[in-house]
Image (cartoon, rainbow, N blue to C red; front, side, top):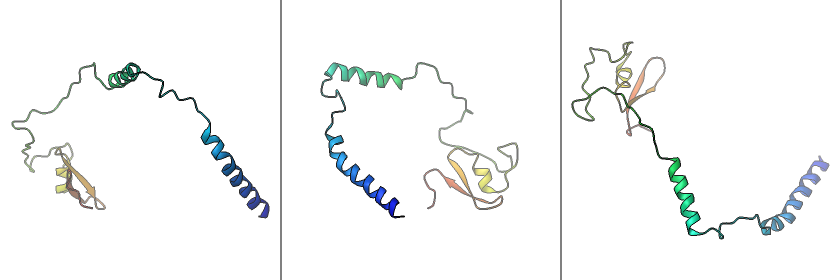
Length: 115
């Protein structure tokens, strides 16, 4: 036990002695030596990474009015009928369900979750 404590103390002391020396060494960063044109070129390269050159196709049912969903609970919105109201609402965009054990759950509207 004493040997372990001594070895840990020696390790800590050696780290404390060498830390200032390691902090003063130059790693070789060339941040100050870059010209404005090189910095702009790097930013342009970063910008090009996030641009999309391909066409993105989104498939969704056509709605009469945006952000308005009309549904009839007598007609299921999924192949398997919902066990409760929360299960029915989770298939509507913006709603999700928090399980409360078994098949029961609480509906949660986007941004209005309790907690």
